[in-house]
Image 1 (cartoon, helix red, strand yellow):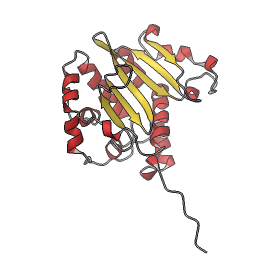
Image 2: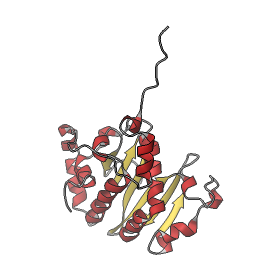
Image 3: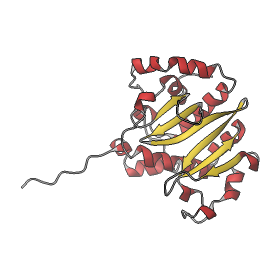
Image 4: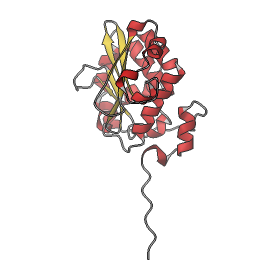
Length: 223
């Protein structure tokens, strides 16, 4: 009698065990990444014109700096997992007129939009990480905490997308976005949500990955 087959390892568990993922999420360790990226030249060229169009916009410096920070702080082993477990789209054609969008599995992780000559962001997170009692009760959103994460209370708002434990946090302005990403609990929430969806398997948005934007996320270009 043959031994039962072990279930196939999917998602980030192929590269990082649960302890390593937890330590990264908590900010206790930065797992080793690869040095060389796997790239598709045809795909790089496909979205080159879009990335050049974005770079001509007045919001471009703030978009690219925010992407650099997001890639560095919010995605584990980003080089090893590029495109196949996360991707970034440039000027996506989907509704909402986002300038850029980061995805994993079938889920949007974050998006940046123009707000005059400034920018605004949408971060998808687990609702339970941002309620006062860790519940899924919409009435228990920790609004006081969210307001402390930004420069002025008017810079933050939220939505409840479809899904039991999904929460959308809208942050307005480059400075407030930076403060939000620098807040430990907020960053923990972003990392937790990203881990959830990167562990679900291969990214469904591989064909829209913009390598030119990923260059900024991976710190390979400046400005």
